Amino acid sequence: MNEPFDFLIIGAGLVGCALARELAQYELRVGVVEQNEDVGDGVSKANSSILHTGFDAKPGTPEARLVAEGHRLWNEHARALGVPIARVGAVMLALDDEQLASLENYFENAHQNGVTDVERISREQVLQRVPLANSAVRGGLWIPRESITCTFTACAALAEHAVVNGAQFFLGARVTHIERTDALYRVTTTRGVHTTRWIANCAGLWGDDIARMMNSVAFTITPRKGEFLILDKAARTRVPHILLPVPTKISKGILVAPTLNGNVLLGPTADDVQDKSDTGVTAPGLARAYKGALQLAPALEQETIIATYAGLRPAASTGEYILQVDAKANQIVTAGIRSTGLSAAPAIAREITRQLENVGALAPRKKFVALRPPRAWATGQTRPCFDAARIQENPAFGKILCLCETVSEGEIQQALHAPLPATTLDAVKRRTWATAGRCQGFYCTAAILDCMSRELGRPLHALTKRGAGSEIIGLNEQPA
Ligand SMILES: Cc1cc2nc3c(=O)[nH]c(=O)nc-3n(C[C@H](O)[C@H](O)[C@H](O)COP(=O)(O)OP(=O)(O)OC[C@H]3O[C@@H](n4cnc5c(N)ncnc54)[C@H](O)[C@@H]3O)c2cc1C
Image (cartoon, rainbow, N blue to C red; front, side, top):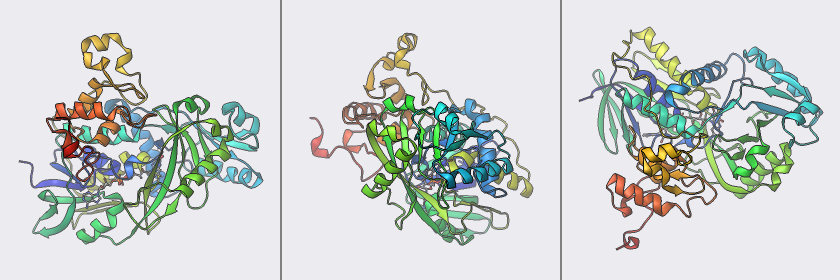
């Protein structure tokens, strides 16, 4: 019996999962409630998967400090967590005189933020590094430690590492009411009530609503939409580095980024919207993302677009990260983690625990499990189906269910029986990349559902894309 929890975290995005993992290193009872049926199914699933160095962050801000520390922590813990990182480096391209002059500011900015390995490079050096860059380029900056990772793996890994160290996740549980009675909070969700000593608001886009329920700091969150296009794998070899434009006042701008899974991303746009659930793409948004990317690399027009998506940055009214530990009210608030939260998440969690240590000593967990249980495959690695010895060990690694991404039944089974099991089709996609390839699930969805039904012991009609209301097969469509 874990309740009352010492800490109950609301929201299982990158920030909530990083905090759960950090707190689970201590002798604490940690719970996490999440309205979606999987971790990382909010803002955290729809970013550019770039691990920023913080070279372009505003010097002296918490964001600048935490992105730099987060970059270091991810690299430190990547192996234990099984999170792949590729240090591909980034080139910022100046396409006219004004941008060329701005590069100098970014060079200075990088140095102020301690990112001293940033170099000015000439037009020729840009074209040498990235032959397909716009030939009108005037010069650039080389940022060697900008890296790519897989946001899906990152979030699941943080959550699983928390679970193997005792944290409990309650998925599909939306928080509807919070009240404080004596020393405990009573948190009502759509799937039951929890009690806890401390409460942590990591609710992303809904952080302002949860803050109101907690009677904590007042702020508002505006969703800022970013739309992306994904290019087929043939484009990947032509894009060795991340290509960055010179940023604008409101966003880092539209970039071209290789992905660890072997594709290329074009985007994102930056448009404030009203609706926090409006994650649909739009024709004008995609057209702008495409045009912006082609400005950096016009030759990408020859490549095939296989998918599109959009994410919403949770921009706070303060314009900054909001991080607060209130020891009188036993409340933690993390909000406004807008466009750099993948990079900063482990440092945000570390910062919170540093502040908690000032409030009272935290005892390290006696039976701390240092490693996340290993997986047969991580994004970017060679699939087990290409290794005869592994197929001999487990024949399910030789049975391919998703042809475009060469995902085997064995990898899907592993995701379905992980410490934090995938229970929806989208969760399976985020763990294995099944359905994410060129056919976008057209050919493989049936076989994957069949496997899920068998392994989870659920009828086909009960399987969903991402929770109730997204059932994939109607009752009448089931095979007899
Ligand atoms: C277009 C775009 C590009 C980006 N690119 C990058 C990048 O390249 N690098 C980088 O470092 N960062 C990037 N980011 C930023 C990064 O993705 C975010 O900062 C990060 O995902 C925020 O994580 P979070 O945990 O705060 O929010 P979320 O992932 O949204 O997590 C909050 C969770 O709280 C849950 N929740 C909310 N209300 C309730 C409730 N009432 N009850 C229960 N649960 C609730 C939500 O369902 C959600 O899962 C990008 C973001 C966007 C949108």
